[in-house]
Image (cartoon, rainbow, N blue to C red; front, side, top):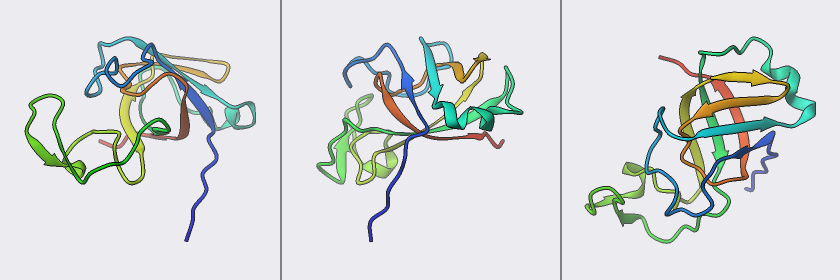
Length: 128
């Protein structure tokens, strides 16, 4: 069975290579801009500055290779499901970040750990 996803927008970050990308979410890192396609902008109604959101994205440049890899942080070998590596069978990224601002279909956040122009799959309110 095959599944198909349609991006609802894209994410602009200052990172163009995996080596430049932070290892994890960092709320004090560089600003990132989440752009929503025009047909989905009304879906942002009810979100506000200061709200935590779960951002789901497709790591389209990632290549799956092995089920175990060294941690980029410690070098310790772990299973990919114990790591935030982009090298996964389904390269879905997930991050909880705080909205800094929303302006006409653009959400400003900080600290996403994805590459520039990453396809955006979904946004949900983050649950505590």
